[in-house]
Image 1 (cartoon, helix red, strand yellow):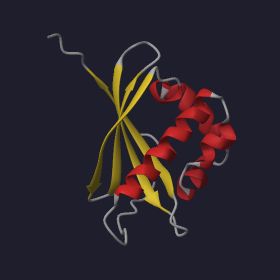
Image 2: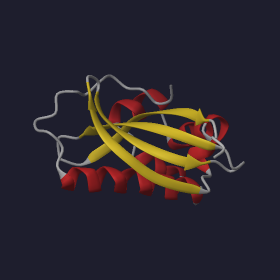
Image 3: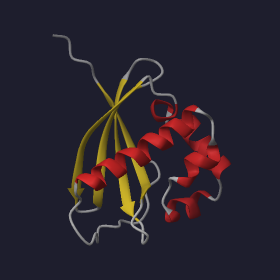
Image 4: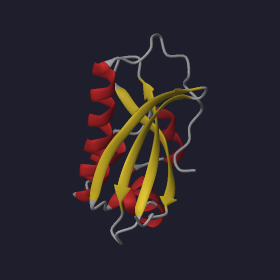
Length: 132
């Protein structure tokens, strides 16, 4: 599991359509920052607890480059469901990695005290292709 921080499950209210849009924007902007090799911008979308664990933007970018190529250099990104789990909100993202393999990324997200959303973790799972 990548980037897991303590659970932030105590959301004040169920997510609404605006939250769904904001969460997708945060994830999409972080992926765009990865594509641009903008480590400071990519790191800025991480939740404070995650930033504390990783220490700095360069360490964060190095970890992503080494272990999360489908997120670092996706060929395609499609958003799935936003799920309310026992550990907080999880956004499903379907990726095609740089090698053409299919992946599912589960992004744990946290609402910050100012109402914005940040990424608290990401778990990747490779998906097998099914022939029709």
